[in-house]
Image 1 (cartoon, helix red, strand yellow):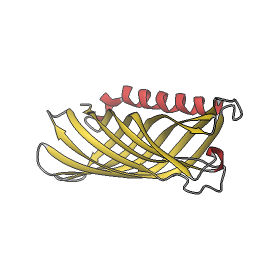
Image 2 (cartoon, rainbow, N blue to C red):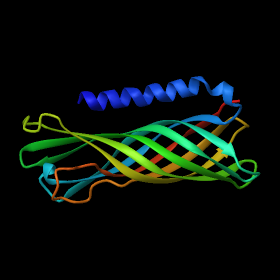
Image 3 (cartoon, one colour):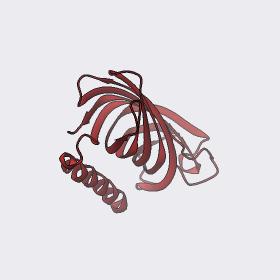
Length: 199
């Protein structure tokens, strides 16, 4: 539990500190944030069944550095934090609650279709943080923290040179096996938000 909270604090502190130095990097540092829906699939012996898949409101923030390669292409890297919410499921007379989030590190490539529209893709690794509790107190806050790959894509519309609107889809590759006590979720996260580039 303490390790999970420390990881969250370190990630958020890093995001804020990097964003605070953005003015020194003339247009290459950006921050973005969004809200949406995460479809979360959990497998593993700890949930006492093959799997459960449910959706919940989600959110995410990120800071990144992007370098222009030519008139059409940019490349860079991004550090972010995503919260996938808490889903619940009844197993007999017991109610299981599963909360998950992640710290993401990914490479990002962007293709500019024209002056207003751009598409982007990303790939990297996520530190998946999960916690299971139950109404009978048997699990007492079981934690699972694992590194898993991620892939994502999105589209962005520029309002002006600094502010953009964007939609993003990210897939997190979790544990699919129901024969293990590891239970990093498989997550499909859909976010709509804003992207701001510092100058």
